[in-house]
Amino acid sequence: MSTYTVAQVMSAGGPLEIAEREVPEPGPGHVRIAVEACGICHSDSLFVDGAVPGIRFPVVAGHEIAGRIEQLGTRAEEYGWQVGDRVTVGWFGGSCLHCTPCRQGDFIVCVNLKVPGWTYDGGFAQQVIAPVDALARIPDALAASDAGPLACAGVTVFNGLRRSSARPGDRVAVLGIGGLGHLGVQFAAAMGMETVAIARGPGKADLAKQLGAHHYVDSTAATDVAEALRALGGVKVLVATAGSSEAVSATVDGLTHRGELVVIGVAPEPLDISPAQLITGGRVVRGHPSGTAQDVQETMEFSALNGVRPMTEIVPLEQADEAYRKMLSGAARFRMVLSTG
Ligand SMILES: [Zn+2]
Ligand SMILES: [Zn+2]
Image 1 (cartoon, rainbow, N blue to C red):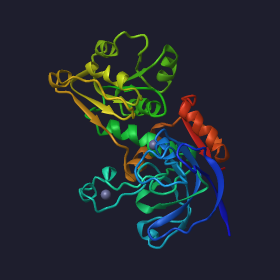
Image 2: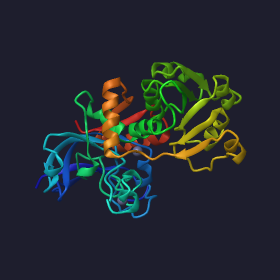
Image 3: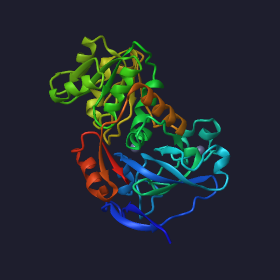
Image 4: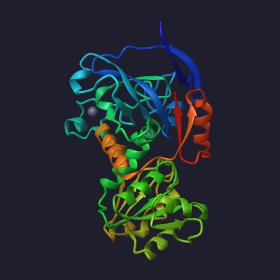
């Protein structure tokens, strides 16, 4: 019997414990992936904490999976995949194909969306079984440790920007320069947008410039962030990655007419926005989910072409619990990535 290593959680909020399991066989339309790297996302805490419906322990979280296909289930070949292919699986872990959004071709809002770590065991492990519709092909130029974070954090900001009303030459802002925002700034600049980075403190100004931002707004120094944005001429689109509803709400008056606030960062408190702030300028507030496997593939191809890379701290799978706690504490500067290598 061959076994593989996982970092599993036995009960809600418990530690990520290293365990050995028997290597499973991929079923029809599934593949087994030898995981090389898996990013740790804040959303993993939903599963570790058992905070989503239908979650069953032990939980193996991890939905920024990058590795190589090592075994095909029956029919997987029909979809064009082969043993040895380099692939990611992100938040989009497959869709049901029969709900109304799926029948409309809008797979990312599938009501039965499969998410690794929730619907099936995720990537904090040496191996993962995933359905073929969850797979995105990794370009040769990308390392596995870069590809993993692009499959959730990356595609979320990439799609958030390209599906917005902003076009090259437009001024856009990215609120927060953390795990999502540091990628958002790079994407916005690479898309040819005049890019404003907004973060807390003067210390992030240099980083913002390195990432390609044309302007930096220190939200702790500006008495009014919206006013600072208006002083630049206002922004057509603001992508809010910050986990603070107060910080997000404070930006709305910095949007131009017909401006768009794209909400990506999850925060528990309600947004504080008055109807008048939206009505007069015809502004829009919109939530934005992640992206499908095809979106992930396009995110990776764009990143490979344009030099966009996540900033990562790579630690061995065996240290999953320390790495996860570091992400939760906010002490990790960007993306924590577990490596099996
Ligand atoms: Zn995620
Ligand atoms: Zn569906």
